[in-house]
Length: 357
Ligand code: KG4
Ligand code: ZN
Image 1 (cartoon, protein in one colour):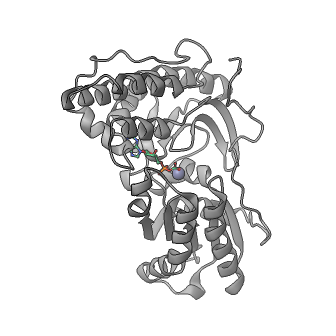
Image 2 (spheres, rainbow, N blue to C red; image 1 turned 45 degrees about the vertical axis):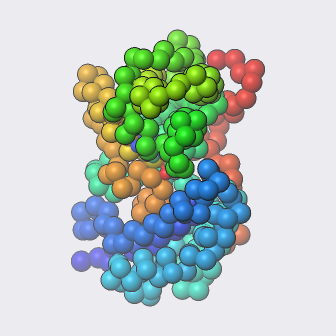
Image 3 (cartoon, rainbow, N blue to C red; image 1 turned 180 degrees about the vertical axis):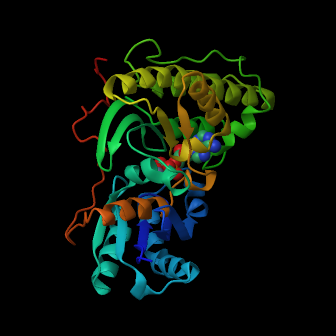
């Protein structure tokens, strides 16, 4: 039996401090030995959003015991670790620097390779932690900072098919929640409130619904919600607005995903049609079931990470580390933190006013 790589993954790009040990079995199926995630919700709650300086301070306070806990729970010894993989971007630079510096120092102290990981690639590969997934596949990445359709051709090989031109979908959920007076982090609570409401009570806009290919836009939706919240008086109307928002988002994703299917098929000469949905918003059960339905209608196999691996975690960072380790894709210890690090470096920057779609 050959010795399988043992990778320490570290994540600190935003408000989760996380560490994980992963390896694989004889068949090459990844095994998560430990997966520790410490959230900072209590710290940021009173400010209604993530405060970078406080987030960084908390990462510094926790990183060493989180890594220690991940090693202890894995049942393995430090000497057995073959490489250390840390998130290097994108994210808040003060936060990234903590996990990145810690990972580099740790790798250097045990004299093992260091691997810099793109956080978005972590989300992109997260379904590999519990399912077999071959390239190419179509990815919908829906997180707090990103909303993109990507043709994933291989490790590090991404072609962006569509992106949000303003707010990310998770951001739209969070801002809507805030306008409805829901405590931070409110995004996940929208679908719970939505269950009690009437989804056709409010007619909300669907920006660039009929143009712009599979690019998306959510800023106009937020502005409409802001106007409506000024007029609503009852709890029931609040539920109705949450339900109308949830339904509108589903309609936008349904239409744009069908366009992305066409784009993907034009670019890939393959019968294997696989659609992966990853990132925090992939935890939304109604969005999941709507996307599963359109996959069935269009002969796509749908894959989602397990719910606990949709949000930020270090197992997905270890997963990228494991793939890069096998290809000997190591990085130098002067690798910089990159606040902006698109998966498709060649894609045009599509944010801001005056964009022609
Ligand atoms: O991937 P993630 O944990 O962090 C980033 O990389 O951004 O995603 C966090 C985002 C937040 O905006 C959060 O509101 C959203 O995912 N989210 C949800 C749900 N659970 C998390 N949005 C809608 N419905 C959910 N159930
Ligand atoms: Zn994330």
